[in-house]
Image 1 (cartoon, rainbow, N blue to C red):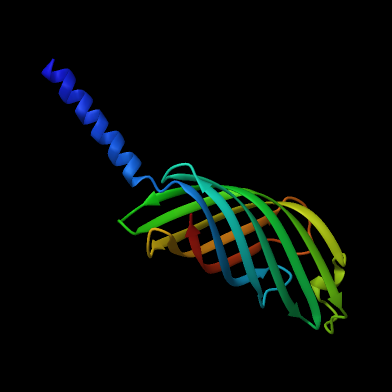
Image 2 (image 1 turned 135 degrees about the horizontal axis):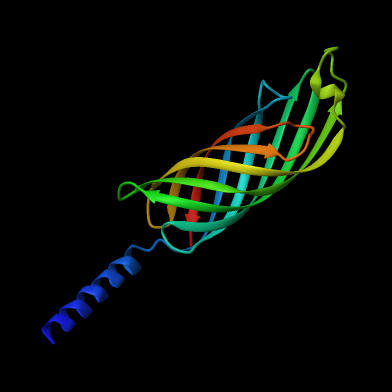
Length: 179
């Protein structure tokens, strides 16, 4: 009887610690940074907004909107990407985590202007394009409080077909609010 009681108390304490340590719930994050692509190697600004849900401290899903805008060779390019991802988190310390994200997205690209370079790759692309893409990212987060985190992330956006952007690599920094 004592063994059963100690097992039940031990199991209850483990469940209690898991629930108390559970960082689950809805969140929203806002990030800004710098992106480069095959056709805009000098880079462009990127901003993204993600909303997600942590099922537990280790797994979340999120949907996001990314906007990239930049100019090169007197031409302007803007890319909008809508994505859905799965996010896995590896807690390292009390307030510091590493995470990885992988998912799918839909990109919409538009170009304007007349490039002033004869061999500009951007010039040979269609002025507007829609494309499917895969994305993979890795990052680190630091918890400032129960509700706020800082994030640093590197994400690669890879079109499944030829696109007006080519592969995009983005490094962003931002803040997350946990509800």
